[in-house]
Image (tube, rainbow, N blue to C red; front, side, top):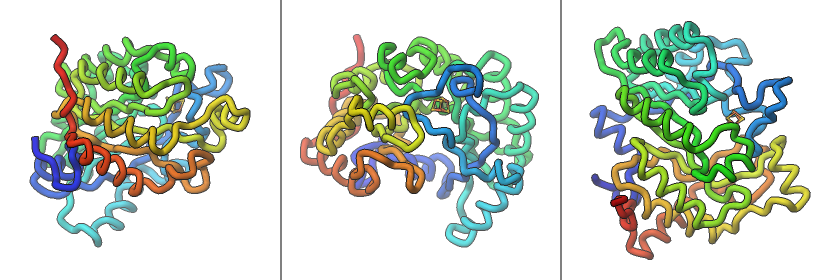
Length: 316
Ligand code: SF4
């Protein structure tokens, strides 16, 4: 493992550059779709921190096909980084929550895009079956250039505590996530887990237990999210009623720095802090300055003499 001098953790951008031999830019693609945990009329209600917007760019709702979206972003990025390769990132809602035939067509379309070296799909662990996992594994060999594609599967874990998962209305337990991660990794897919710090009812020790759980799984990357209260979410109602109080900035810095120190050193850090759409963030206000927060997390680690994995102890 090697870390950049400013990041005492295995950062994604330099990792991608080493793996693919050139800089790799992420292209966000919005394939539309939905999520079983927030289907209208299902009564499921969605995760408590989720907003109706999900996480898409909105380009699908504007009628742009994936190919049109790809051209839109490539034209934008080609000027800034003409030598870059691309990672196609399907982020919005649950991308495997669609008929298998539709998923196959989507993978086929993306794998033909020029200079694509990797495809990442965000989804829920309960939206996968053998047919879809096999399809994703086969997509590695789908590029017309003959290049073997990296297929990343991004799964929301958020917490290893089933009590917390019930509290935030995730609609699945930690065991379901562990099964999905193992089945994906067994097929050669790269697994990235989303993990949240500062969830309702959770302490720093709970967050560290989630890191310990991640360490036991065949995962290749993690995206950390500090919990944000967003307009339109159920959590916003709790926050307004005083039933949820976000952790302080100091606590967030200490928890994320400690979490990185406990994490296995081979796990790539794809994201360190959470994003909010402009105008959506209600609390905590300091979370809007992501680069200052990242700077303080790194500063805390350096002050403690930590790198990613410094406090990792393999289970006996
Ligand atoms: S799984 Fe994702 S899209 Fe679905 S309700 Fe939860 S956060 Fe929202």
